[in-house]
Image 1: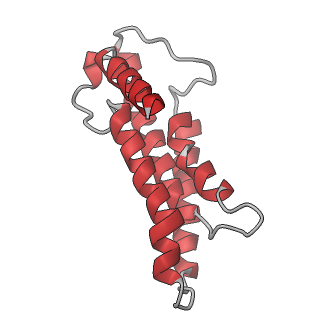
Image 2 (image 1 turned 135 degrees about the vertical axis):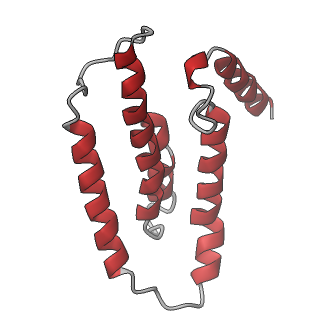
Amino acid sequence: MLIFKVLYEKLIELDTKSDPRTAHLSLEASLKYTFALIALYLFVALKLGPAFMSNRKAFEIKRIIQIYNLTQIVVWTIYLYHPKFNWSCFNTDKADYTMSMLNLGVLGYWMRFFDFADTQPPQPKQPFYNPVHYAFKPLQN
């Protein structure tokens, strides 16, 4: 229990040090919300989803998966070929350039949550790998 208290205190500390220019981004400005969404996702992917589908036939979602894949391709292509995208770290000064990149960063952040839709059922040999792998993708952005 002590480790959760320490982690929560660190999250609060990080929130107080965040850039005030991102205050209008309610979900993106705080790691608390990111971790809450990750916890909700893990609950649905590991407990609620398998319980719901235990006595049901798999859904036929081929068209949804095609739309999902196409969306991923289009959005990440826009992200990578954006004229202001840079493979190195971005400068965090107060220039307009930096703030214009914020929208691109927010897009990438939400696309990582969109990756939650790609979760496959846990496999017998690796029951937690796939859901946990996707759960922590938003923290990579």
